[in-house]
Length: 346
Image (cartoon, rainbow, N blue to C red; front, side):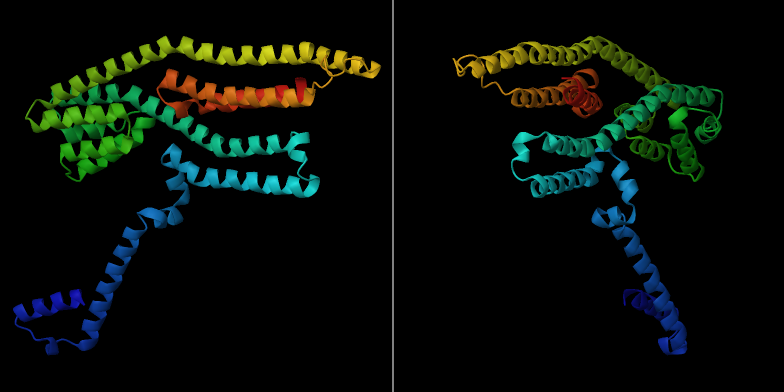
């Protein structure tokens, strides 16, 4: 064993022979070293790949919103397949064409696959927004205390006792690292990596590079705070400017739904009734809407409404928040509204 060889070399250099050491003690030492190395290797394997997922499933699935798809997509496919076979075995193949039950199962599968991602993305966007709003105040406070004569570790230690919302736990962890004499630049890089937002990485990179170049840390922190303020102001302005387009997308969906409801409830229903009346007389049945299938058209329009609602939500998210996944919350709401409208009102 490698540890035993190292220990033997140490004994030889020290003037001792292996025979001078009790064999039982040496075996116990080697066993202890092996146990330590095995535990280290076990911990390393548990931090990567599938082993990490098995050891910490909740942490892995929720650390990034898209990770939840690892669980939600297989579950959605399982619901779809089981629902399909259940309907076929209970009602036969004709249920796919004569009933909306399969549509309901398909919608349930989509919601199971999408809703967890939409929820986690909404939660992550709120966390990111709260952190980005607190970052400029944090940098400004640290700069002010550093200018008053405090060292950076002392300034961060005092600031960590304040309240910065969602950012507070990250500041406390930064303070813990600096209390253990971790260099300021390294601690800041870890700070930005843990926060994992664009503004944080941008600010940390600015502070770290300026500090390495030998600039005044207080001035660098104030510059980072001003940059963060401007970034947030521009982002807020962009969101406000794009809000009108998000509203237009949502209103367009409801207009589409209203038009379909009016057309189905008046025009198609009237045509079907008139065609049925003509068909009863036996004259011109094939020429005046006698073959209009209201169920077919209702189902077709319901599919169109739900498809438009889903993709309109993605467009609204891309336009409003520069991220299509952020529009899933709109998609879920509009798809559910379309389903309720066609199942209970249209």
